[in-house]
Amino acid sequence: MSDLESIKNDAMIDARAEMEAFNIASEESALEQCIYLFVEGESEEIAFRILLEEGLGIDFEKEGIVIANYNGIGNLGHTIRLMLKTLSHSKPMVFTFDDDDKKLVSKLGGVPQNVYMFKIPYKPVVTFPNGESGGSFEESFLPEDFVNACFETTLLRENSHIEKQNFIKYFDSKKPFYKQIVIYLKERGLTNYLPNKIEIAEELACNVNPVPDTYFRLEKLIREIRKQHPIQIKI
Image (cartoon, rainbow, N blue to C red):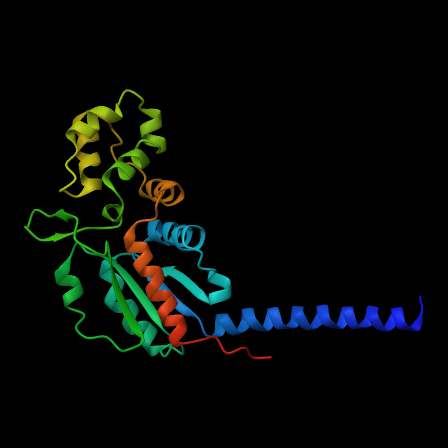
């Protein structure tokens, strides 16, 4: 190898090393300057990542998005208080929550500027027995998508005598979705009448087209937060 070729080769190696170091620094900086995305449960934790990454193109690693679930609306206030007391207290935090228990959410009162509250679904869809309007994760999707997802679960596949068309006739899109499939299956004598919510969530996230408006709005919020808090690369 000539001296010139050797110099060129060394330069290429140096350039690759610099790029690799920059990429590592970028990833570490993104994690240090992360945006926390808290969701209500395991179903949402799985589905939201699929919807936002694969459906709407948010690169969680590049944008420094950390997703975690707070295991139910009852833990929402406690999780917010805990996070505000940690070293992460100044980081942006998005808390999503089902719009099915307005009293619990209203008890939170005001939240700091770095905490963003986002209800699921974005707009009311169904009416609850107490007369209030709202919804939950399942209602953030179209009724037909929810029904299709239910009939792709292990439970419904193993009980093929339960016909989708009969349930569609029974189903009321103005009432909470999941409760209806549970009652329907119980009335038909199934010992296990609880379709797996995680299976439903994953089926919805992987196969819905187009992505529901709720998640476009959540994507917009995340991108706006990142724009306001750009990642500073530390090398």
